Image (tube, rainbow, N blue to C red; front, top):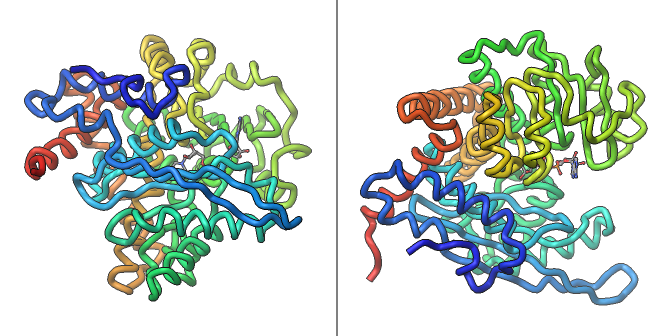
Amino acid sequence: MTTTHASLSYLDPARPEPWASFIEQIDRVAPHLGKLSHWLETLKRPKRVLIVDVPIVRDDGSIAHYEGYRVQHNLSRGPGKGGVRFHPAVSLNEVMALSGWMTIKNAALGLPFGGAKGGIRIDPRAFSAAELERITRRYTSEIGIVIGPDKDIPAPDVGTSEQTMAWMMDTYSVNVGHTASGVVTGKPVALGGSLGRQEATGRGVFIAAREAGLRMNVPVTGARVVVQGFGNVGGVAARIFRENGAKVIALQDAEATLANPAGIDIPAALAHVAANGSLAGFDGAQPVSEDSFWRIDCEYFVPAALEGRVTPARARGLRTKILVEGANGPTTPAADDILRDRFILVIPDVLANAGGVTVSYFEWVQDFSSFFWTEDEINARLESIMVKAFDAIWRMAQERKVSIRTAAFIIACQRVLAAREQRGLYP
Ligand code: NAD
C-alpha cells in the first residue's frame, strides 16, 4: 500500500506541503533499501501528534488562545529530539515535516535520538516579553505529558531562543518537582547549556560547505557566498565563511535584500541586526530586487530562512556551484531535480544544518553526567562527527550514483528501519 499525505485524516489535502515533500523524499529512497523497505510505511506516519490549546491572559487583561503542537515522528532509536518554532505560518503539516527531517538528520549523523518538532502559530514580535513567557510556560505545561530528558527533548528553532529554553526548563522542572536540565537543549550556559551550542548550526553549515568544496575543487578561501536568512543559522554561517577567507556578497532577511560585490562586513551587519532587529537600513550594502538576489553569481548559496524557498523557478535561475541548506526543507523536490540537471551540488539540510543537534546531543550528555566540556572540546567533537558523517554520505552517493540528499536518506533509513525491525512490532 502506498501512503500519501492525503491518507492521514488529520491533514488538509488541499495544503499538502511541506509534509508531501518529506514523503516524496522518503519514496525516492525505497528502491535502495532492499528488504528494509518492508518497514518504510513507518516513516510515512508520525508516531504521535499532540495538538494543544495555549490560553493566556494578555497584558490588557483579555484572554487569548493559540494553537500549539508537538509531533514525535519516530522514536525507534532513542528519545525524540527537535526544536520549537514560534512563527505565524506554523501548522500541523509543517511541524510534521520538520519532525520527519529530524528523524532522518539524527539517524544520518548517528545520534541516539528519534525525530520530533514543536511549534506555536504566533508572531513572537507581536507580544511583550511577559506575554511570551506566559505562552511558553503554558505550552510547556501542555506538552509536559510527552516531553522529558528520556522522552523528548525540545530545542530552539525559528522565533525561539535561549530565553525560551530557560522558561521551558524551569516550567518542566517546577511541574516535576526537581531541576531537570536535560529536558531541553540550547539553554543558557548558566542553566546547564553547552558552550558552542549557539553557533553550532552555523559552524556545521560551514564545515559541510568546506567538505563539499574540498571534493569539488571550490575552495572556501576567496569564494563568493550568498546567504538567505540572517538569524542564528545564516548569521553565524556568514561570519565563519568570512573568517575563513570567503566573501559574503549578498544577504537577505525578512525585511531587506542587500548586495555588495566587494564583500559585506559581516560583524557590522550582525551589530546592525542586534541593534535594529533586521538588516533594513544597513548601509554596508545596496538594496537589490528579490529576483536578482536569486540570480547572483556565486560559489556557495546558503538558504537559511524557511522551508520551500528554493522553488523550481528560482532553481532555474540560481548561479551558484554549491547550494548548502542551512534551513530545514528549503528546496522543493521539483527544484532539487532542476538543480541536479543543472549540475548544482546540493548539500542537504539533514547533513548541512546538523551541527546544532549534534551539539544539542553534547549538551544532553553533559547534563546527564553533570560534567561540562570546554568549547575547544565541543568544537573538535563537532568537527569530527560532521566530517565522518559527510564522508560516509558522500561515499554512499558515489557508490549508488544518487544525490547527497538521497544518500543521507538511505543511511538514515537503514538505521531507523533496522532498529524498527530488531525491536519488532508490539504486540
Ligand atoms: P532565526 O529566527 O534566528 O532566523 C531566521 C532568519 O530568516 C531571520 O533573519 C529572518 O529575518 C529570516 N527570514 C524569515 N522569513 C524570511 C523570508 N520570507 N525571506 C527571507 N528571510 C526570511 O531562525 P534560525 O534558528 O536561524 O533558523 C533558520 C532555519 O534553520 C530554519 O529552517 C530552522 O528550522 C533551521 N535550523 C535551525 C537550527 C538552529 O539551531 N537554530 C538548527 C537546524 C536548522
